[in-house]
Amino acid sequence: MSHAHLEPVKSFLMDFQDRLCAALEKEDGDARFHEDSWTREEGGGGRTRVIEGALIEKGGVNFSHVFGHELPPSASASRPELAGRSFHAVGVSWVLHPRNPHVPTTHGNVRFFIAEKEGEDPVWWFGGGIDLTPYYPFHEDVLHWHRTIRDACAPFGDDVYPRYKAWCDEYFYLRHRDETRGVGGIFFDDANEGDFETCFAFMQAVADSFVPAWLPIARARRGIEWGERERDFQTYRRGRYVEFNLVYDRGTLFGLQSGGRTESILMSMPPVARWIYQYQPEPGTPEAELYRDYLRPRDWLGEMTEAREGEQQAR
Image (cartoon, rainbow, N blue to C red):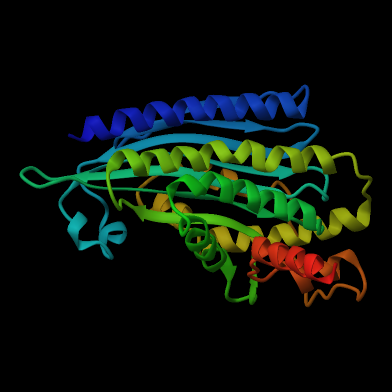
């Protein structure tokens, strides 16, 4: 039963890693991904791919498939139905830290988990999502990002995008900072409602929406001039990325708890980050605009619709 579920998902994910890396190499120019294949002593392994180029200062696209006879107690404590089950976890995760501060950092992952026990039905679910972390505000970029994701979700129900968009806003909220990590996207976990084929198709749609969502933004912003001021702000805001991943991120915590490969798990960290004591942006600057208008949950597409309706009524 597990192979009927696992094999098509694994095949898609490995192909998706290949396609995503090819698209990013083409966009970056001369840079190529370096692949590091690895094995996990307890079971499984993966392909870690990293790139350093003109567009992407540090990026990684990881495929992993780990399995074992039993989850560690720390990982199954909140899911007692998983106790005593063997498991497989397969997924692709990617993080891109661009060189130009006007190009947003972005993160995504798609994953599948299945746990089995003889004589019982398997427990399985999909998870994943994509999110955007700009350092400088471009309203049209945020609208393009959310519109592309909404359109990918649309075939699966009108409630899917708003539900998973809200989950993303909540998930990527840094409570100790009272701000969001960026402008969101979608986030989903434990997705097993309905049949396997529909859930699998949704995961594929999320993965395939990433390139058309992010690459046009990168193309539009990579040529904007920047200097020390913008670089300083970029590296300061990257510190928030580090804080989230080490304090809240489920994938990071699960990977470390389950004995995953530390180098691959922490690949998501930016190459350079900094912390400034009690930093405050200067009023009237783009940095202040980011804090004021972008680092909080917003109904980006709903606000756009309301604005258009207001303009039509005014005419």
